[in-house]
Length: 164
Image 1: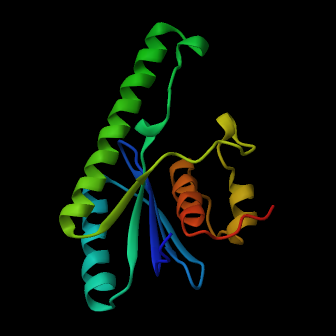
Image 2 (image 1 turned 180 degrees about the vertical axis):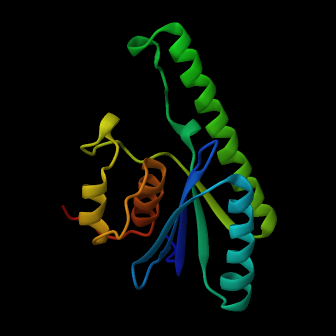
Image 3 (image 1 turned 45 degrees about the horizontal axis):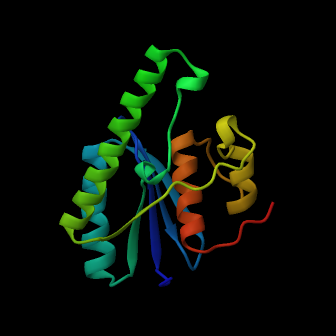
């Protein structure tokens, strides 16, 4: 794996995607949630300021849920609920495709990766605020699930240690 100055992890969502900018050397994190238009503006800023002006090596890492082997929900919900989950999942996948497409269009390097294994203590195996804080050092604000997922995505992609 090529070492980068910054890893931008994105957990796509229809409304607001979780976005984490990780400065690898200092392990400094900037974590937020952005709507698609604001995310595109942010990616343009990253390209212009960090890549073009400061000559930093940056990669955009987008969680690619469609790489999962299966996403079967019918066994634990009604057919209507399963259909709604499937619809939302499809919308999230399309947002992920569009984020990656726009980042490449802007001139950024992109890696679409399979979602990380769900092995945490949170609902459905998702990482909790407490677990994430232990890994990255104390977090100064409460993060929603998309933001936490983008954070652990960038941390793992950068090859930083996970000690609990």
